[in-house]
Image (cartoon, rainbow, N blue to C red; front, side, top):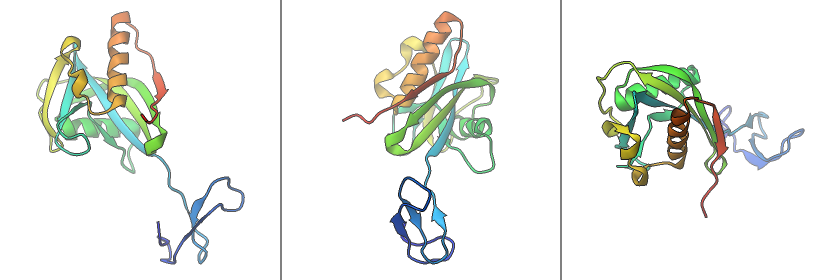
Length: 178
């Protein structure tokens, strides 16, 4: 950030009084500009023993598989955002069961909230951000072609929980691979 979004003055990067980390500060109007993690919301859509995956039509990770998810928008709840993303990416209609996984990814400043939800209709298809969408049984999941570690972890927890007959809330931190 170079300029204050309130007054247009050049900002400085220093620790504000009473804070413990550097922030973008405007020496002219006094505004403190906080840059916080982005929230990604999505759904693990299932139908019977299969899950719905989307093949990405956008970067990053073009052509790889993922669960429908994306950035939460202002003015919506996390569940509303997850349902919107499911519609945008897979044209999927879903009944949300519950929050299923929460993952922090500190090195890219993201927090993922993934819900588990049942498809309420078998009419789905690729939205503008997907090349294709498909229902997969566990044994046919394209594990080596998954776009993001958070989606792989969420799917592994889902199939493990499904085998036990009990679904819990899963949490974790995905660290940068060196």
